Length: 307
Image 1: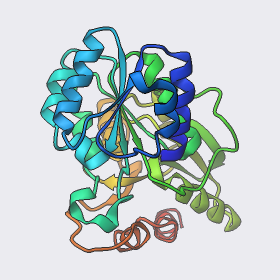
Image 2: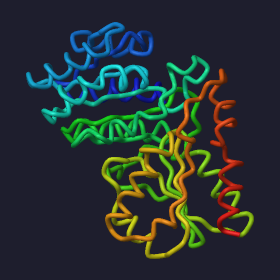
Image 3: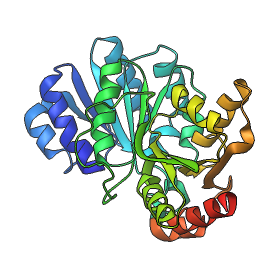
Image 4: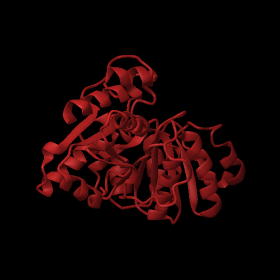
């Protein structure tokens, strides 16, 4: 996903002359092409994330359109006050790109885990949140975030995530989920790094005679209410898959919406991680296995409910 971001930011900068890229001392070689072409619109802010957020806010107030980029756990938790007050409070058009969302950097230990980032960003009024499911959603999400002119958190993975979409997404819209499969027995709503697992699970269920609809629910802050209304009217189970703690993520957002609309919240099944710190040292694949964030676990859980 990060390579897709690096490529797309170059293309976007060629079209948008006010775009400026700020990096938190990572991705130096990743952005070589960008720096060669737009050196006057690139700043390496060093290991000083709070300063970087403040700089981006000042640039936005001066008429520029900054995009800030670094590891998600350091970009969200460390400078949260600056994101809230400098960007959120003033409703500034800053795109906040957190690379390595979820367990992408699991092998670096607990400091690099980002399993509560969506929860805390959802608490900032007006903050848009896009959790990209593959490289094509990274590209489309970046463009949509920039064009919206609103503060946006774009959460992306790290590298080698499987592609779900075949090509560039022409109709990507903030607040509008992307349909991937049709099915009447249950619904699967997935966001972020686990979208490929959700697709695999839906296909396996189909081979076993259980047809599930599958949607990429990439926008978490502005829910696709039209789709949710349709799904709840079916009165069939709705499974929410995300590489995030169950508390505060997409599943919680949908529960809150359902409660406000007097919908049957018993239909919702949140397939995220327990709201606990993960103290093991493991790579992303191993960590997912320990936290029941695998296609096999999702399959078993859905079978338990639907059988």
